[in-house]
Length: 341
Image 1: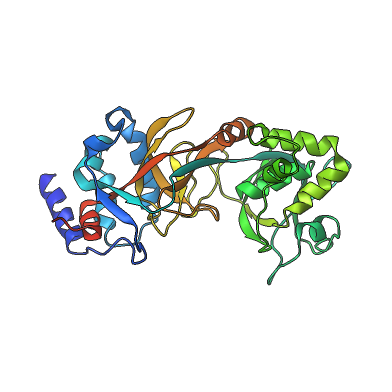
Image 2 (image 1 turned 30 degrees about the horizontal axis):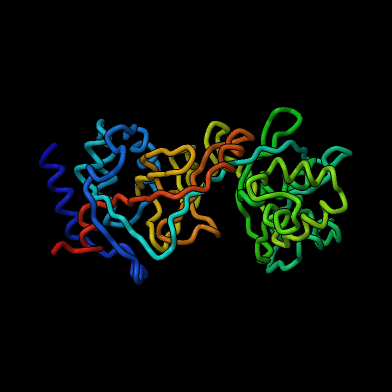
């Protein structure tokens, strides 16, 4: 076994390449594992299992030996400590860690008095219709683009904000949805709009509060929905088991509380990440960079996947915290990014 490890590391050393050509003025610091808060207390084996699933998507020679080794490991902590180095990458933006989830809406394959709001797949070509033109003007009706219909337009809009989700059908089965594109209009927050109008304070706004306000104020609620001209389309995912999470940017199911959405300009997709989240409910955890997001920009910016359903959504809404995240890179890649001396 020892000879196999040495041979694998020699192969990796022969294929060193920089992490990114575009890190610009980002600051890079190589740490040791004893500098990671709470490292010894985490379940490293759980992190290794998520890493293994992601490894199957790697095609870069720098990662191939590490992924081959990962398949043979029974001690996750020893594996990461032997073959990785913690790398802190920082830019001038303050660290910010938020969270997202997979919504589950009730709906049907055919419209009726209850299920009236269509979930669309993306039309061919460029689409520039606004949300109002789609919802009020009906510009997409009659084109066979409907995947399903749901009962609440605000829930649909939050589904679009998350970018993936499930629709629970009357027979108990589900439709799994993945991101299918957008109309290209800039996203505008409904919560920010309610705060700007003086209706709520910042700390009062949540998905549930917004939905309740729209139901109580139908005319103003429509205007609020249309304030966000951005509209997201979906694609139906036919082969994702119900027990697994949604599909992330690496075309693999993501895992609650172990998957991160990151900015790939600074953090390579598939890399293990040590996250130290501060705030009201702090935690330190080994996670894997498996997803991206249009609002996730910066070296110390990430979105934590919290799971599926309403409870996960409530938990995700509470997270907007400082902290730090450290990328674990194969030893040769770490020192190629910042050579010693």
